[in-house]
Length: 408
Image 1 (tube, rainbow, N blue to C red):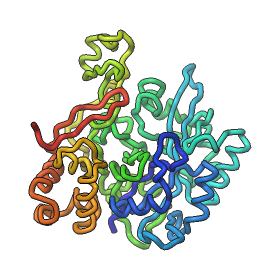
Image 2 (image 1 turned 90 degrees about the vertical axis):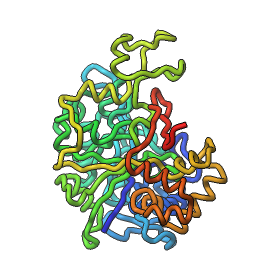
Image 3 (image 1 turned 60 degrees about the horizontal axis):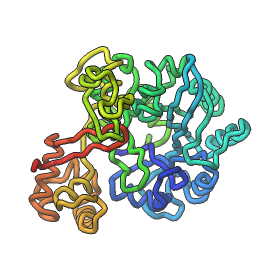
């Protein structure tokens, strides 16, 4: 059976995140989006973890659903993101990592261990830990060998394993003897698998994609698509697929166009200046307006570490499909600036109700089915996105890029 996962999101207890992020509301939006397995997020936060224990029940090994019986096909997997700030190799490192846990009992042990170390789990759903990534992973595996650590949005300049501002040049430099247990990295919104595959050092690592959503409306803007036997549907099966690099079970990832990511190219948001890596080198990496260092984006950072050029994903790696979220497509078709406008939301709900979930509409539905419920114009826009016929103004220095399906 086809299973679509989005393992990295947040709860309403994380900073700058929507109050709409409740377990029941999240499951509702997963149905709309077509996400089958959602990461719980933020399991270190005491109040959110209490809600997890109160509202969820284990159905398959390591997979949970709402006790209420609402949205019965949506599963939760226990995941969270942690921020780590520490010294290594004479530099201050700032990394974000995703943790996967196989059970509520394992999460309880993680939280108890963090409490004993004196960390404040109440301040933020994504806690800041002064822990070295290698040592932290060792402790996690001492708690439960099935706990998995995956570097989050691996190329983001400020907080990631390869970030230009405070990251590392290799996984080994960061994780040391724990590197063999890094089965996957998260590519992040500002890079795609093709960019990552230009590093031969990542050949033995799987690439996963998740939304990192701060509101339920953004679930599934990136996701992972698996083909799993119903009898094997479990936490352990997902971990096995990543550990063994099973490219038959892991079918493809669903990707944001990396140019839309808010750190794709180099730039200075304060001055409204951005440029491609070649120009960055010509101007010495300094903003021509304010003369301050540019924020070096993902495209430049990948180019710095890459050791080959590839035009397509190698056959032994997981392929990908790029999308533009349906609400963004509708906003352009209706010539409105906000995807949350009443007109967009009304059409979105109509299409979801009468055609199917968002992934079905974006990836599978026929042109005639879309046109009969929406319009020929909207059907054309969706099929242009499927064919990759999209115009994008790249994002930089914290400013999201903008995708357009039709030119002026």
